[in-house]
Image 1 (spheres, one colour):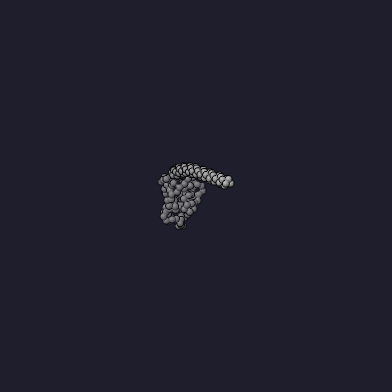
Image 2 (tube, helix red, strand yellow; image 1 turned 90 degrees about the horizontal axis):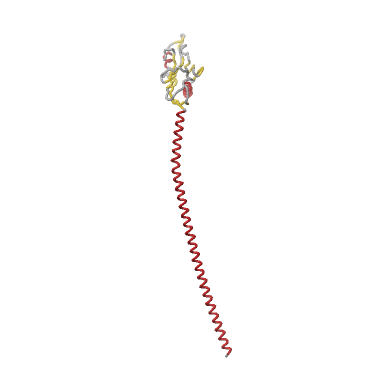
Length: 226
């Protein structure tokens, strides 16, 4: 009888211990789950904050980049206008400099007096001057010369450009233009020049040309040919 009572008591004690253990385990699991949920919520909160912060930083960065790009675009838009202005000013300066360093003139070389004289004879022999029937060895030509250029410089440039032979004893004494030499008609025949219709008193190498001057070299057969 006592043995049965002892067995029953032991079984009851074991059952109580089992129940206590089950309750303790359940409470631990609930505590662990609660802690896990809290940690998860905290992690989510932290992650959300970081994401929000990252989004804010990204937005701020994009805004800054947008402002920088806008500023750069504006500067680029302004730069060409400034560059165009500078180029225009530079072009104008170069044009003014070129104009100040050059002169534009016209020049022609005529042999009309020699053509009229060609039908006469010299010492009984017929003249054969081989001259252009137009009366122009070099027709009126426009030249751009360096500032300070002389009448001789203009003649030399015109002959070079037209492929016409030029002969001279000095730059102020011309002996031949094309096929027409001095004294080809008479002993007094030769080359002279005038500027703007007037005969200067200076040699061709001394007369400084001005912008717009008209130079004419012409052949005379006597002092009457002017």
